[in-house]
Image (cartoon, rainbow, N blue to C red; front, side):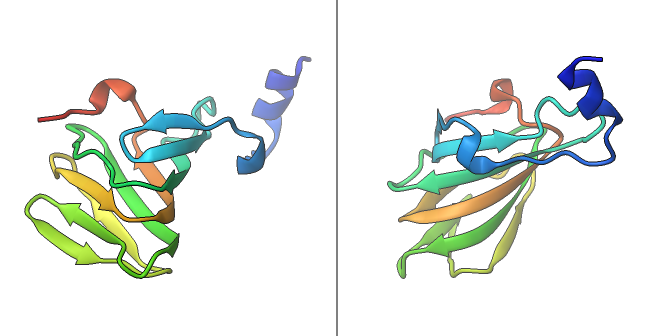
Length: 123
């Protein structure tokens, strides 16, 4: 049995974000976990935002942002509204909501269903 087959028979999967390579995204740099886990319906991203993110939306995906840490002026733009952020907040972003992060922050993002680059849309 190879490693992948062994992993599929285990009752758990471990993701170490320190070992996942960063990927550029409209928000900054994302480390995406569990994309290859067939029986898990989501992906989990640890995303570092060091600049104002590019406004975008998803037609199918729902995202949940959990704020791990952020600067005092960190905000999230959701359509035409901006909300102030602080560590420990959690924001659910429904499909079709144009959004972007403003300021420095580290976020954990739960993406349902699994993240798909083809579902990132820009005006």
